[in-house]
Length: 163
Image (cartoon, rainbow, N blue to C red; front, side, top):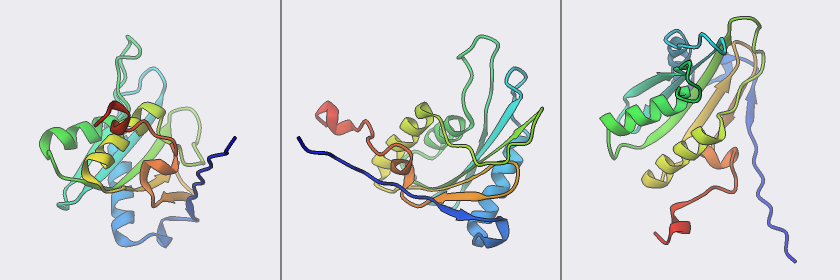
């Protein structure tokens, strides 16, 4: 028997003043995207901003539907928009933030598994691992420099399909 181990780590910043200008601007764009969220059922609003290799910033927010699970998370709204409007252009960084209607989300949230799988495929297509910046409504900021593999170390990859 052999144990296969993959480790991951995040950088933790105490507040936005510790971020570089590019990361700070991307996080601000994600916070703006929170305002476009449609979340009348969960009351949990998520905003995402993607920085593309060509310098374009794409925003997305979660969009719910009364017929669960017909809605989409902010990350997939943004990445599918990027793929539709800028095919072949890599995502180099992503920021995600959140706001709840009935409580303060004090810790950064992680993307769900469906979003991570979608994002990882964009990384595989481009060959670039996106820098990921995460923050709750305020406080600490987590940064992952190794892309989606940080959160999903044993990814489902196209090579499993013989490609």
